[in-house]
Length: 248
View: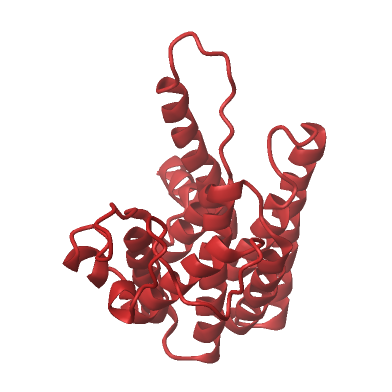
């Protein structure tokens, strides 16, 4: 599962790099960004090629970005966690599909600060199917659907009230899909997303040059993905812990 996740992450990187550039996603050999040389299969082994060539391109010696092996390790680990949580089933196939699309959305948002519909819509569909397969009953899935809808509407409301300055509108359907995917952990994941975003935002503000009055624009999709997946795979729920502490 780890190897599968790393391989898919490598392909996702190609999709994100070529999307809306006029280059074909299905055809065309990968090339070095520095010297434009055609890369061999040995140059494209996830993580292994980066380690073997010590972070340098074999063709020209140019330094390689660490983001590629990092995303390959990350998706590989998440695929493994998904397998351990769900087991071999139809729901696992839906979960892996949704996770691969989620990585593409996060990477594209980091690069262009926009969530393309061509990736967002399939993610929501895959998440809905997975959530339905994982739900213990139809009424339970309907409850999850209502929670997902409420979370999405709250983000849409933030977008409308701030006139797009606080949050992009596409974050609402992304949160909707994430809530369907994570089910009972959705509300905790929603809260974790804002906590993670607040911490990162404070760090960026502190590191801003002294005297600068320019705002800091940060894509929110990575925080949403991190918060929801953290809640799903750890099953941490701050509200249950707070209620337990209060009762004691």
